[in-house]
Image (cartoon, rainbow, N blue to C red):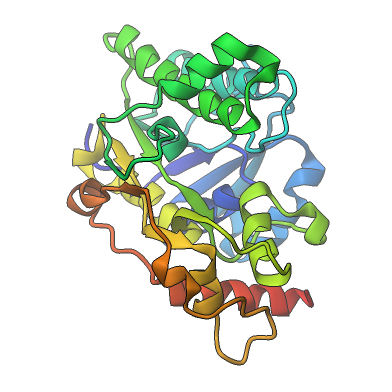
Length: 334
């Protein structure tokens, strides 16, 4: 499909952490945005946040993404879709709590696009490196060719007894596979192509509505705990800045060559102590044991070369992200 450089974009779950930044980035690039939220109340903060953009931002209420035809009206008249809505947490009892909304929400919006998205040229889906990784005690460098078959197998074998992480990761694997299978099955009848973005842990400042620390999402809470709770800064992982991920979502529309691609959006690996070392020196947040993170063994890394080649991605530094997060907390009085 040709590059999409203007027009209207539907963003699902628009009041979420990642999605709010996607909306801002699209508006800043001159797109119009239709943000899908579960209720009028859920969209109130967005109306205020993007008021300066006037009628280039509008809301669509989609109460339940698992309902058949939930997005039928929302997809009408849009040129592209950014699907970000999917649950992210590790405390599900029944795996279906995560699997069903992830899979049915993804297939539902694609089915609506197939039936009623006559102007749609591209759909971008937010997946995760949870759909890429395999848990191992050996060093790994993973790329877009890798798939996580481990988590779906654990959930299938253990059901409710599977780990919370496996349940979440399985939801991302199965939802992404369902998206690619849908496009393959309906390729002759759809006028759009698919791009899937796979970020690791997403960190950075927040612009969506967060009433208090208790309302933090899974990823943002990990950062807050590391900076404020003694003993919480052990271990590590891989990360990307939410603003970089939002930029990748926009470029996934703007770059013709992105069509049909699966792309890892990852800045690099970290130990939590690295974040404590990266915050501004005058910060009031805990310092942990300065330098301890330098010896952290990063068993898992992701090759982000494809994001550079296809999307022209360059990533913010840890210092940039840490400073923005601290400034965000201080502005909120945390």
